[in-house]
Amino acid sequence: MTDQQNTAATEEETAPQFSLQRIYVRDLSFEAPKSPAIFRQQWEPSVALDLNTRQKALESDFHEVVLTLSVTVKNGDEVAFIAEVQQAGIFLIKNLDDASMSHTLGAFCPNILFPYARETLDSLVTRGSFPALMLAPVNFDALYAQELQRMQAAGETPTVQ
Image (cartoon, rainbow, N blue to C red; front, side, top):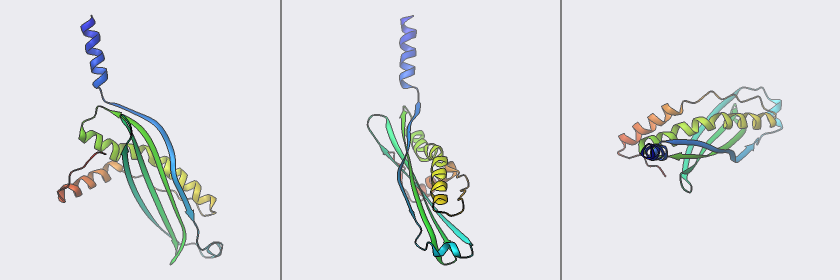
């Protein structure tokens, strides 16, 4: 009976674990350089979205993942507004092999953070008195796969920090 308990305890210690500890806004900015004149013009916006992720190992098995969304909206040739959010999370991740850890930090965690970042960005833009900015969902698994292909073509190897 004790052997079974020891085996169960050992399996529990080596089983993969994932736990979201905290989600928070790390940085937030909004700039509307042409207001109030921009509000008096015909509204024909063009939207440019820049998306980036980074991760950092914290103490023990904790990791911080930061998803950055930067949006520049132009009305014609003039910048109507620039908005950026760095949505971050602290995750407890244990007992994953390197490939699984890389995928978890590069795709799974950003996928969790995206709805929060999208809502924060939308709220920020509407507080600036601009129309709601409803960003489409992002397939982080596909972006991660593309980045792996790019790294392989360049002879680089993915690293987990």
